[in-house]
Length: 258
Image (cartoon, rainbow, N blue to C red; front, side):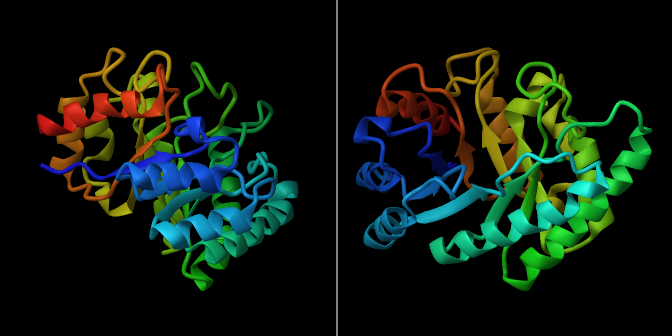
């Protein structure tokens, strides 16, 4: 079974230097032609664009910048502005997925009410994205370790929001690391929901290192995801414990056994 991978060059191929264009070239030189980045406003987009063009690489995801509390309706105008900026950068770089989260929750407001307000923001953003052939991918984030206070910290809430919006401009980014940190079982969380999954990211527990260095049986987990119907690349968003190629060998070895 093949295992296509999408490499986050904010975290990997740092050996190539600070410029993301150089990291994209280094990844491509070693056979990794699908990449991901985080922010765009502080990056040299000319360098990234040229590296993608020269290597024939694909930018799979980038962020909608600005961590806003979408449960606060007062942030929605700013959110749609961030979406427009991300869509503009994404279209320039040939990227079709832009990543967002729900933002933190509001302790003084019922969760169901907050959910509805977030859905309103996501609907507005999805309409903008879809108009330009881009999809916002809503990411589940764990509150136990990395993102305390985040409203949508379960996969089920993210799926419910995507279904409530019901737009081709919004789908799910299933982050298996965050899901597992929350004690979820991927096969159970995604059963009957693969139609809304646009991307999957992975990292090992407990320290967000490369798969194969922690406590997760990744051969079993990845097999489950493939059997559920996920056919896209697995995004590598982890903190390498060694240089990039050595860390990638762990994933290659897992893939060879699938």
